[in-house]
Each structure stands twice: as C-alpha cells, then as structure tokens.
Length: 284
Image 1 (cartoon, one colour):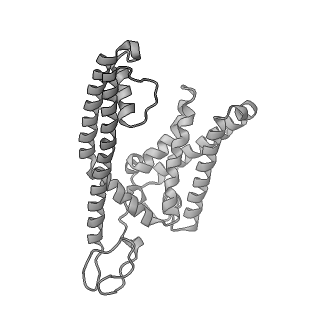
Image 2: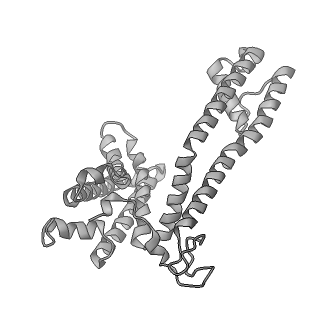
C-alpha cells in the first residue's frame, strides 16, 4: 500500500507499536478493554444492577460499538485482511464483540464478553516484553508436540472411568444413588481426579473397595500428563539453546536471555532480536 495513503497511516497506528501514536493507541485500547470488563463484572452484581442497570447497559453498548469500529478498521487497513481475520488476535477481536450482539437474542450471552481479557495479551508487544512471548512460544510448541501422547492418555482415562462407572453402577445400583451409567461415570471422574464431592458415595464393601482402587489410580494418573509435558518442554528448551550461537566461536548451548558467550565471553545478539515474530497480521 502507498506510504502516504490513509490505509498506511492507520496501519502504522493500529498494528504498530514503534511510533508514539501506535503505543498510545494500544495503551488506550488496553485501558478500554479492562474498563469494559469491569462493567461486565458490575453487571453481575444484583445490588449494582438494581440501581445502575440502564447506565451500565449503555456503557457496554458504547464499548461494543468502539471495539466494532476498531475491528472494521483493522480489516480495512491490514495488507492481508483474511490473514488477520483468521489469526489468533483476529479471532479474539471478533469474539470480543459478538457476545453483546448475541445478547439481543440470547439474554446473558453478554457475560461471555470476558473473552476480551485475551486481548490484553497485546501488552507484551506494547511494552516490548518479547522475551515473555518467546517463553510462551516455547511452552505452546511443547504442548503441540505432546498433543498425541496427551490424546492417547485422555482416551485411556476415558475408557477407565467408563469401566469403573459401569462397574459401580452394577454393584451399587439406584438404591445407593447410582441411578444410571452416565451418573456413575461422573462419580468415577470425580473420584479419579481426587475431587470427591461426596454427593455419591458407595455403601457396599465391594463398592468401597472399587472406590479405593479408583482413588489410588487417580494419584498415579495425575503424574502422567505432567511427565509428558515436562519431557517435551525440556526437549524444546534444549533445541532452543542450540539456535543461540556465538558469532565468534560459533558454539551453542546458551540460555535464551544470555548476553555473552559462556565459552569465549564474546557478546551475543540482543535477546529481543532473536525472537521470531509469529503474528502474520503484524507484518507490513
């Protein structure tokens, strides 16, 4: 787009943070997001709504109109509107304004506007906290790498709770509160996660033995996903260290925030410059 055009100036202000106008816009946006969340919280208080319901509703409509205009401006000035609309921030920006409109059809849907809190993540860009973004990307990649193992784990847990639920239903029966297999599966999930609400309790000796086995199994099961994610996180951090190489001795293995080579003492690249920008909507 031409650099002197209105679209380019809007793009620099709305998507960029390297100018004073861009930083001021993002900071003002974050303040507006937090203020709109406070309004949503106040709307959930009966004593406040009894006195200020009309005023709070008008304020909420004003914030929604503001965020709608902002979303349309982002689509207008973005070099790749489709890429922005389908990006993480684009989807969150859209979901942030939909609840108020849905509330016109489904009362109470406006409280789903709390999803706007995700938009505050832009503060990492505004305050140049790219190192935190780098750490969050490592964690996200670790979770993605472990997704198949976690899926297999949860599938196994699903099979176990179904078996234990059906077993406790047969043994205890409706007389002891286990009126159906789905309700018994709910009891198995609550028990295996060591929550134990106590709304359904086995009364027979065999039922108590099964409950004891389920609880003991729950403690061992809780450790499995932790180990999977920890292993993937360790692999991802080690792989990331290999990317930070010394320009003098060309050796790797440095921490992500290291300023000097631990082998020869030479200065490394600025940690902020090592971050690979992930958001396609930020690219000019």
